[in-house]
Length: 254
Image 1 (cartoon, helix red, strand yellow):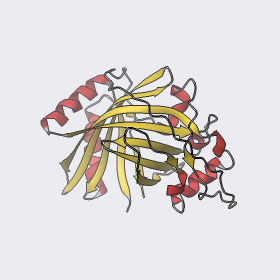
Image 2 (cartoon, one colour):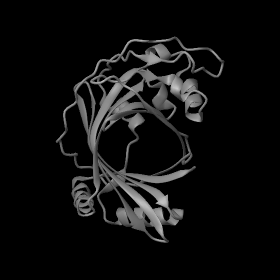
Image 3 (spheres, helix red, strand yellow):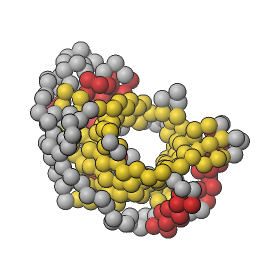
Image 4 (cartoon, helix red, strand yellow):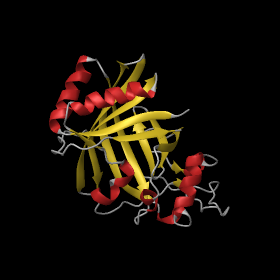
């Protein structure tokens, strides 16, 4: 099933405006802590791929997202992973084997699997609520506020995501247009593109299982079995920096 969404960055004024709107809508609140993986030379980012492990409340989710160049199509594969109490789960690439996203991941990494490491992390609070839209539609609005970190480098995060849940695409476009007209918006930077701008170093990521996920040449990747050490990331209070308004970012996922 295709999904259609618009993702925008917010300046402080727009952020406060949407905080108030979400508060009055009694929006649901969640905290997400995510770890993003790539090679130091950025093989995945160049291919438009994001690979992450994310803590969502009491569960962990492993996700691969692939944004095709010059297209609004996006491949995404997400799967829940188990972790021992108080510990982070292993990154298991086998979970994406056989999927379109997994094939893109294998092709992008090639024989560089051994270089795969955690490049940066994000810690954010999400407020989300489904709003009625025109033409009998419904749009879920998610407000993400937090921080992207890599070693000592930090970058504020303030994003608004609009996803069509019901109705024709025009319902989403109309809400996005109204949101843009209010001002204080810019194109959101994709997470896989943040690594080159935010990090000043990397932390080696062990605990990668990959023996069953194969490259296009049907070559198996080496097995890893060590576990990534758990690292506590406190709640964030740093406000986003002032940004300039700009165009939105439209994407379609399968």
